[in-house]
Image (tube, rainbow, N blue to C red; front, top):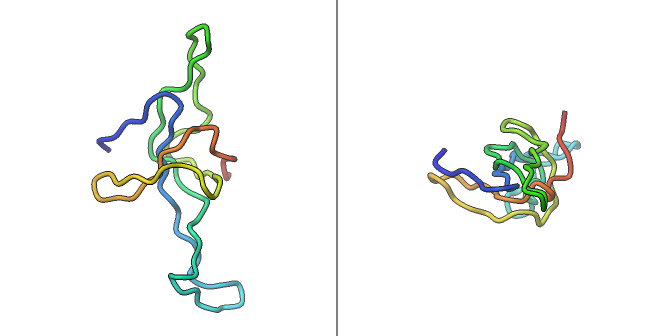
Length: 95
């Protein structure tokens, strides 16, 4: 990837949601919500303390994460839609 986030920023690729409900109904595109789950593509070097010491990020490329509904900024890199957000916007890592 030609984009490297700075500081405590993380680049995330959304994971596509289900096409059907548990009952078997097909969900049309217009009714789908954007998923709040994604795969970490790239991670910055981390935040810095007031003393200048580096705080290493808790996530790494390849992690599947859960984030807030309105988190991040949508960007397009090499024709692919991605999200860039602060690490603190990530709610957790899905095991």
